[in-house]
Length: 385
Image 1 (cartoon, helix red, strand yellow):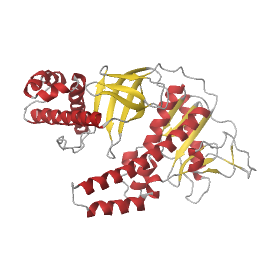
Image 2 (tube, rainbow, N blue to C red):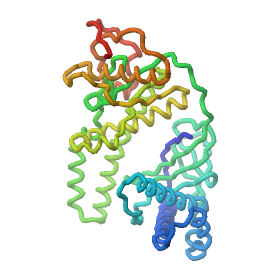
Image 3 (tube, helix red, strand yellow):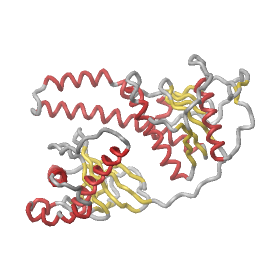
Image 4 (cartoon, rainbow, N blue to C red):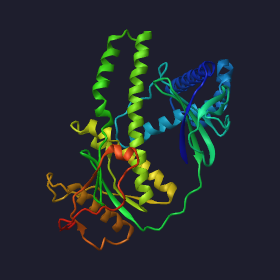
């Protein structure tokens, strides 16, 4: 299953209908949650869905929302309850689910039916949404496979997006002819076993001063006034722009490795645990290692390539912090562990001591990442041990 994300351009009338559906989904979510909180035993998903016809009779406006959408609200609530129960089993301290405040319900789902992508041959195609109509959509790439589900999402800036969940055939696995190990970091976003050191784009840090200014402006506005809402949308646009820049970098970098290697070995990092270090929390969040690994995994799966995760413990053992090749040696050790895990054997030749090939974040974005081999003068050899 893969998800395509395209922007919607609804008319004012269509946007009012979309907002109406979001509000009815929010009220249904809160109603179901109040029923659960008032029950001694949590009702099953099937029992909660059986309550929908009665609720529709009590609240006529629910009939103006697609039936599948209402069922998916129940499904979402049930999943949230299961996630809380799982956390409790692990010994985590968790509270109860909170009611959704006005404006806090951001998306609704159309599952199996109630949607249709209509090609127009123009810049904007049409997406038929049940109870809304044909909404203009910018489909900038071909959608391959059968659309199983559509998620309509509204962002804080007021922009609307459609997430098309498509079922694809599984790609056959390719033979491993080329392999690379990747060591993720903060100073450099990553260093690989081929000797590349890719610059950390630090998307959030570069716009931090601008964000502070906009936050100060927001704090001076009267809460929930027109000017406050206008400034809030402006602030949301900045955050969304930062996220888009970061995602663009991560998509293009992960695409480079999937296109050039059959086996990619990475560390099995527990990012959430690492973020508990308050000195590095913001930098780790800005780097988005977890998202990069997700992008790498699903792209590799679609291409029939292999991603192996190995333990990060001891990959930098015996290496000093001021060693310029520390991360490169760690990446070589990560590759070694991945090959051992697959039973592929160890690299026969020693790693060559070359200066690292530093690649800027802008080079990644414009698609000018260096080729898979570099040939600077050798300075000697070093051992992985």
